[in-house]
View (tube, rainbow, N blue to C red):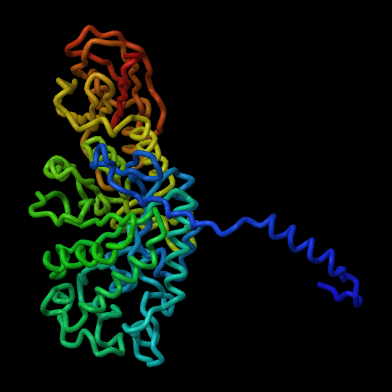
Length: 509
């Protein structure tokens, strides 16, 4: 501002008193701070699904490889904007407190979990002592890194503004010595004398951890406190604990620590546990765990095997089925219509410099992901949220036959009111030729034997709106109103070669 001549803004004393009184009357008195919004929770009427911001919610996404925060080269706001534009509502991120990957791990090109030299940021402060992995100073496990938590909270806050839930994955096992040597827990990377003579397979135990357990507990409590005001997070204890010697007792202990750290919070965050690759029956679940996640959960047997737990069953990592879109689209549709409440495709098109998900990865990549696949998953998001799915449950018994036989068929049902049906052929080849992709996408000239001719479904008496929706394009291929006397109804189906969705809703009472 410029300077003023003396007395230019002088006010007479009497007028000043009146002005101050008016100001006092115009200013509101002290108000109570608004209570934080309730965080994402299990839906009270159907805990197989979520309740978030007052709405029943299924979490569906195609997200980056978990390095959005710990990799300083990754512009996460652009990434989250991309998810929001595709109407996807979940991302999964690793904290970096224990785990980071070397370049080239698992043949992943431009891996976000493998930051460049000097670009790894962790919750722990760097010491002044040189000699840490990747050329940086060693970590001090007794001090926090304020810059890291500012970045993490900005990430979560921006995600919340864009309608995205964040799965905060606290720990990850060390698959090999190359990951263990990069960890802040490795004795060569910290100045605290912790982790000495500890095998990588003993880091996540209650009795052979070499003094690391108190640091793990402190880190958990730090995250719980730093993120207490956000409504768009839940905590996953450990990624893939069935590798690298992680014990179940340690996992349950960490769940106890999370629960205890939230004891004074009016709205505690949900806790997730990663159970297995594929499927497994959960026995003796920890009472504080509300989300049970599986990886590569196709076919979605894990849902039926654990449905009686009345908790969310999720499929939160895909991959190793080639780079074609169809296997991951079909896995998502199959899992959600089977009754799952969460699906996360691991999308390798998100890398530093391509945070809009346009990176053209090589054919050797262990999974897929691209804008086209995200549009296909948006169709799934719109489809399931178009139903009152809180009133529905998986019931394939309503499907009494398909022609030709051998097609996969699932149904999510509110008897007499709504039916969400998913039909699919076998999973395509890993990386088919262009002509094969065109044929399966419905190009002219495909063989009639590749398509469904009819579906037989049992419906009560009533009038129904029937819509056939193509998961690949999102188009409604056919829509009609039927009047049914009750019993088995035969419905003719539009031609398709990979998969098809069917929505049936009662009209009127």
